[in-house]
Length: 253
Image 1 (cartoon, rainbow, N blue to C red):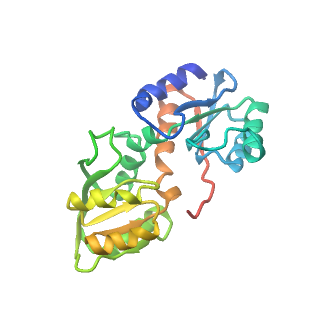
Image 2: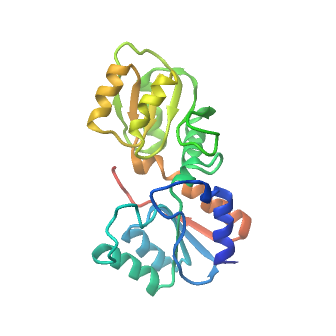
Image 3: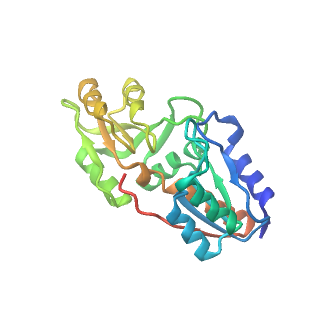
């Protein structure tokens, strides 16, 4: 059991949330009850996750994708009204961390993806480790692109979309950024990576990969970003004794 403000302050500090210029509000987005015993985590604060939180009697919902994104309509109507109404009527807090949860050196999405796939982290291509979003490293041992894709599919439970670059052979040096980071492929190529792994793909990404000479793997936005929020929830459970439960709302994107 912990006071809401103490829990939020701990997360803000751990993730250094104030240091990031983001497209949304990082931290407490919707205020609920003061005492936190149960924390439910998920990738996105969709209605299905909120309904699970109500049924489980969660005190706080912890997500990577929350609300109040830059340039979204301000009016609280329709879907947004129903979601926020669910939180307010049930006094459930909504806590969301976007870029800070991608970048964190130990609990972040990039770090957790590397742990699960056995990648050796060598650094960050756009800042210090724990602050930047584009990570670099090496696979456990050199392998073919198809072998890497099969490993990713086995770990994530989702068949990735693979773009093979002509003339690029084995995979050793890699770069990655979870989620919708496909346009970081140019920086990954300039750094000498054999393959760049992210979540999404755009039409242009295929041509960039083929013409620049770097393999590309789109492993799923949702699939690559399931792990940071789980790690943060487990950290809260270990540090403050709250009960934590992760709910994976299926998303093929």
